[in-house]
Structures are given as structure tokens and as C-alpha cells.
Amino acid sequence: MLYFAPLQGYTDFIYRKVYHKNFSGIDAFFIPYLSLGKNKILKKRIREVKPENNTGIRVVPQILINSDQEAEELLEILKDCGYIEVNINMGCPYPMVTRTGRGSGLLPFPGKTREIMEKVFSDHSFSVSVKLRSGLVSEDEVIAMTETLNCFPVKEIIYHPRLASQLFQGNVNDDLFKKVAGVSQIPVCYNGNLFSKSDYERRKELFPGVQNWMLGRGILMNPLLPGEINGTAYTAGERNQKLELFHAQLLEEYSAYLQGQGHLLMKMKLFWEYFSHSFPRQEKTWKIIRKCNRLDDYLTVTGKIFNMAETD
Image 1 (spheres, one colour):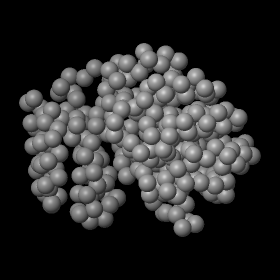
Image 2 (cartoon, rainbow, N blue to C red):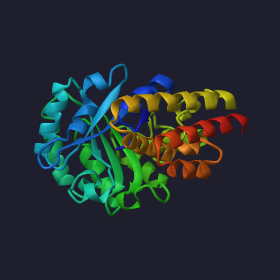
Image 3 (cartoon, helix red, strand yellow):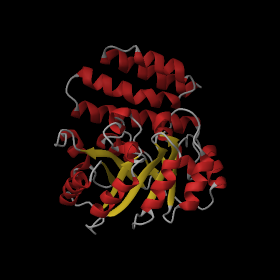
């Protein structure tokens, strides 16, 4: 199966809905993490997991926690929303998260993780997967954590073989992925640097036992990637037509939801940070999008981008 990674700020419920309407190939969308901030949950996080915002697609909510008490509170919210599946985020690499002991900040503490898992599995209503990085500061951490997770009926480990300190820079460690897959008694899903069909095929050859794959930035850069992996071929004209329609529908949906042209323009610029990679002149495309300060300018520029793509 192909999973769409939870990318905070990018794959919100509007993006997921419009993506699913326009493209095929994704078996499950993971919802960016639900977490507690100052002992309360932000409204925008609750909005993401509401069933009415996720109709017609398979979604898996994710929680970001550093204690069994937090796990209990968040799982109760998800249960009230009707969810029976959850992903625990132990992979977020950003310092503002890790310094609170959440995300990758939990990886050096298998004992604490055991307490959390005991609480999670005391409620048998959830199927549980875990998203991991290689460690906060050491690659030894992921082995100890995998051995801890082996003690529980975890459905799947989704493993991104980078240290938190790397963020998204440098190479993924495929040798370590192989080692973790060998230690794990739980099925392991591959996540990390799957930017093209050839990236996928190379990893599939390296890891023939892996059944599930999580793609994130690769889809933001090329929304057609899951279809390509599944064998769909597109002409240049078909490709541009699908991308243009996707952009138009996304703009329409955000226009109806966001207040003010400034907010809308900021959201669409964020989208183009990755979407610009879908075009031959990526750097030039991203540069002219960044310079747009008014929505009218943005609409003119994007129209030209799609018209130019038709002639490439």
C-alpha cells in the first residue's frame, strides 16, 4: 500500500479532499498530529480529525505525546470521533517538538515509551502504528525502541531512517533500515526520500519484504507520483491538465475557507514551495511565485506558468 505522510501545514483536510478528488494511488492519508498545548487542544487540530472533514477517504489520525496521560486524553477524543486506528508520532524532528520530549524526543526513552504503550493498549479499541526516526542524537536509539515496541501488538512501524538532527537533509540510512527490519517482529513500512518512481523501485529491490510505503514531500512535488508508481503513464498534455485542475480546485476551496486575500496568498505560496517542482523551470517558477504580493498578480503568474508548461 501507499500512504500519504502527515505534513504539518501542508496536508490539511482541504488538501486531502482535493487531492483525493483529482488523483489515485493513495491507500491511506495520515492526518498531521493531534497534540496538547498548554493542557488544551488547538481548534485547528480538532478540525483536522472531524469525520465530516474526512468523508470518503481512509484517514489515520496521528497523536504527538510524551506521557500516558496525554495518550489517554487524545485517544478519548479520537474514540468520540469514531476512530479505531491511530498512529503515534515518534518521528517529528523539529526542536520545538523534541525539546518537550515528544516526537523524536521520545526515542531515547524506551522505558517511558513502555509506560505509554501499556496505557494505549489497555484500551483495545484501537489499532496502533508507530512512526519512528533513527534517533534523537544516536542511531542506537531506534534499535532499543524497536525492541521495546516488539513487546506490544503494534500493527506497523513506519520508519524514516534519518536522525532528528538531520531534519530532511543528507542521505537516508538504508543499511540501518535493513537492520531495524531484521530486529522488528512488527511489519516495517519504508518512509524517506521517495521522490520518483525510480526511487521507489530501487528501494523495493533493496527491501523485497516491505509491503507498505509512505510518501510525503515526493507527492507535494509531484502529485502524480502515486499513479506513476502504480503504472499510470501520462502525456505532457495530460500531466499539465491534471496539475492545472488540481491547482484551480485547491485555490477555490481555500478561497471559500480562508478569510482575506493575504491569508489565501500565503497559503498558496506555501503550496508552491513544493508544487513548483512539477515544472521544468522549478527555480524560476518558485522565484516568481514568491514575488507575488497581490492575489491578482498571483493569478496572472500562475496562468502563465500553466500556459508555458503546455508548450514545453
